[in-house]
Image (cartoon, rainbow, N blue to C red; front, side, top):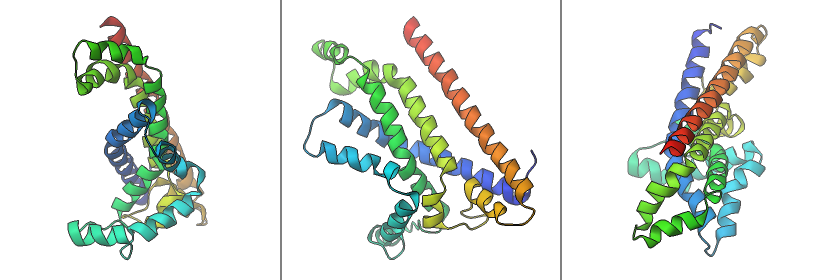
Length: 230
């Protein structure tokens, strides 16, 4: 499944965006999932709706909203550029942001389900022994929800490397700069004779997805075995 230089570059960028987006969004996704699963507060329903909004909005609409907010003339984009020199629109950094936005709901959902599956009485028992909240979470809750965290991370990564609509709207399809695997496949399908290279990229995408799922399953079994033996 050899690719031409453009294909390898698109594959490399997709992997980079996927890993970067997953690592950046993981802590926030875990915190939001814990809030939604364990806390009652004013605006909880609104937060839940905002988190899941990218799942129901057309990806192109999400990308356009990102362009309005984080483009160079947008309020957030202008602030980031003036303050930190960070440009998102039509850059690989914007592809990471689009991947975070689109994958975040899947990560939160998986982690929230894992947290809700933990009996609160177990956490309460640890708290009655004098353990502070952070210690209860790190020593009791976290080990029990690790499979859910792994599942969420894999789902977020898979969404990141497969994201197309929001990415192409926000950062365009610039070879060597913002052209990810889905964008490259789309471009190749518009070019006569590009089907063979497109098929090779599709096979690579399928391979990456299978490897990610298998790795997640293996890690989840290791974690479960450790918890059972511990």
